[in-house]
Length: 329
Ligand code: SF4
Image (cartoon, rainbow, N blue to C red; front, side):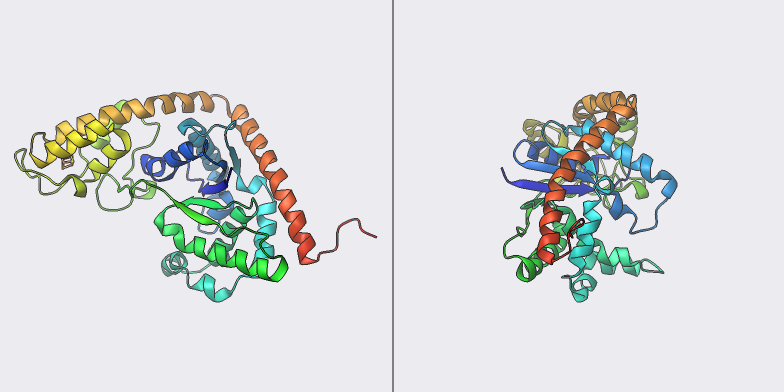
C-alpha cells in the first residue's frame, strides 16, 4: 500500500469548507492508502497566535477529525509536536534547502506582504512541510492546487538530499489532488474562513445551519423567483455537490436554469441533506467531547505509531549524514 501524509492546522472545530476541501477526501483515502493525518501545531506558530488557546484548538481539531470519520484503526492521527523527529528532520533538511527557493514561494510572498515583521519560521515553513512528509517516506500528498508549489519544493529538497547523502533514499512525493471544488464562504465572495465569519461549523445545530443558509449569497442574476439562474456560478450549487445525492444535484441544476424552484426552495433542500450528513458527526463529536481523556489516549497511540516510523528514518538520516552515534566509544 502506498503511503500518504497530510496535515491540517489546529484551527479548532472544522467547518464545512475544511470538510469538503480536505477531510471528506481523507476519510475515503484512509482505506485506500497507508495513511497518516497530522494536526500541524508546529506550523501554527509561524504566524501570530495565542499560546493560551493553542492546546484547546489542537484538541478540538483532533475531535473534529475523529468525528468526521477518521478511524484510528484505519489510519494514524496524531499531533505534530508530539513527535519531536519532525523538528529534527526539519533542521537537517535546511542544510540542503536553497534560500532563494524559499523566498520565491508565492504563499511566503503573500503572507510576508501583510506582516510588519517577518519571522524566519514563515520563510522556512516549506522545509518543515517537507520534513513532515519525508519523515514517513510518504509517496503521495493529498493537497489542494494552492499547495502544489510547496510540493515541488519538497521534491527538490528530497532530490538534493538524495544526491548529497543517499541516492533514492527519500521518495519524491507526488500530489494527490482533491476532487472537491474550492468552497466559498456563505457571502459567495471569499474562501470559507472562520476569521471572515462566513462558515457553517461541522457540528452546528439544524436550526443554526438553516439560519445561516437562508440568507446565503446565490447567483445575483436571480433577482426574482421567475429569473432563471446559472448553477455553475452559485456557491450553493457547489455545496449541493458536496452534500446532496447525484439525483438531487441534477434536479437543482435543472430547476435553477428553468426557474422551477426559487432559491429558498433550493436552500431548504440543501439544508435537509447537509443536516442529515452532519447529524452523525455531531453526535460523535458530542460523545468525544464528553471523554477528553479518551481523545488524548487515541492521540498518544497515534503519536506512538508515527514515532516508531519516524525514528527509523531519523536513524538512517543521521547515519548517512555522518553524525557520531550517541554512546559510541
Ligand atoms: Fe443557487 Fe439554487 Fe438559487 Fe440556483 S436555485 S441560484 S443553485 S440557490
